[in-house]
Length: 106
Image 1 (cartoon, rainbow, N blue to C red):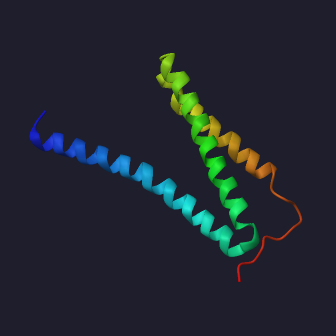
Image 2: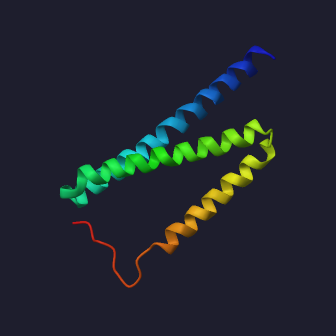
Image 3: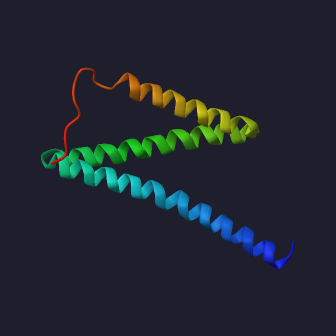
């Protein structure tokens, strides 16, 4: 591998690692700030619950990926990820309240 291509691969790897760690942290912090601003009385509990749910989601994803990786089913990882996204999207749509208006931000 030439020097230029190894530098390019290293830079791409570093970029993927940085985005993989920074984007979820930014989204988590933004959601926490939004909840704190909208309902200050419930801020500690809602931020703790939000953080706990994110940790549970990471654990489930890591365990599933580890099981697939351990059984050498690498070709299934993408399909399982899409299935999780579809399942959770359906769950979000199913749990939305009907006939109510969302709270307006002041």
